Amino acid sequence: MFGRKNKKLPKQSEAGGRTTGRVVRQSGRGAVSPAFSYYASRPQSVTPREHRPKQRPQEQPRLEQNKQRRSLSYIFSFWLLMCLVVVCILKLLWLNTNPRVVVIGKNSISAAYVQPSSVYASAAHKLLASSITSHTKLTADLTGTARRLEQQFPELQHVVLNVPIASSRPVMYVEIAQPSLVLRTQYGSYVLNNAGVVLARLHSVPTHMPLVIDQATAPPQLGKQYLPSSTVTFVQTVAYQFAVKRLTISAFTLPVGAPYELDVRLSGKSYIIRFNLEQDPLVQSGAAIATIQQLAGRDPRLYLDVRVPGRVYYK
Image (cartoon, rainbow, N blue to C red; front, side):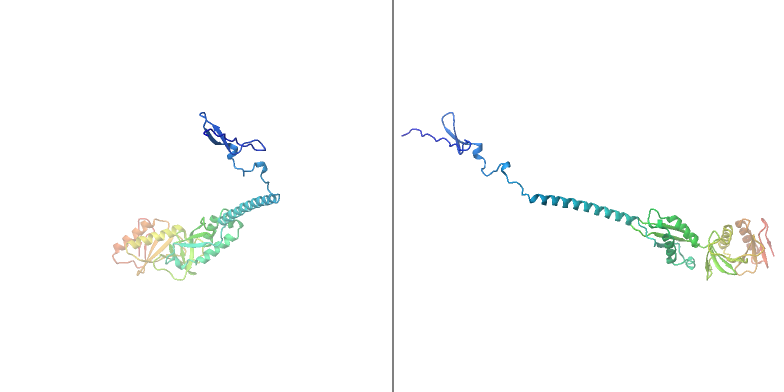
């Protein structure tokens, strides 16, 4: 009645003799403890690798086509990127032949002979467009173009052509030559710079600039030197010395037949002051001013001559 019941042994599988279900272990004390075997707990739905279904034959050509499409798209993207890089580089190096003109040093006097900015821009465009190498920033001869513009336009003292890095249009800075004196001849009035070069012809003569009357018959030419630079400096020095003493000079005269003589006429006076262009203008100006002050209103009738160093003659 109270006897032990015999436990049934696990059944063996027909195929391999492996046990299925629970496995009964006996402990040392005779107790029976259930346990699961490795093969019993393994899912029956797992299919061995060799028994898995293979890929369909129709899918292999599709995979190869996808790979080819990807490789072609990569190649196309690479060359498209290279083309964009080349276009950007060419755009940065390309030079526009129509410069933007910036005028420097223009004032009320220079406005009488300075030409419109469009004239200088058109001349620069013509010079740049005439050369094939001027279409890129690396090969353009900007310095040579600026020098040719200075020769073409004598009223321009200095020309500089610059090309911004982020822009293809060059910028042309033109500095206007400042006038030093006004020259009056039988052919008209002209303005000269410090070097004695004729800058332009004037239709109206400024009153606050030294006026030199030349009695010679040679016609002035634009862009050419008409007077020596030493003569221009001499006139400016004498005009400054007399202005300091509040003596106004109406005009300087270069007489015919006396290449080294310069006559000065004061405003409101009938006599002339004769200077020597080969002597020091400061010494001669000082002698003339001192003599005028000593005469104290008793002006010479014809002339006051300071051409001889250390002596003053008047009549």
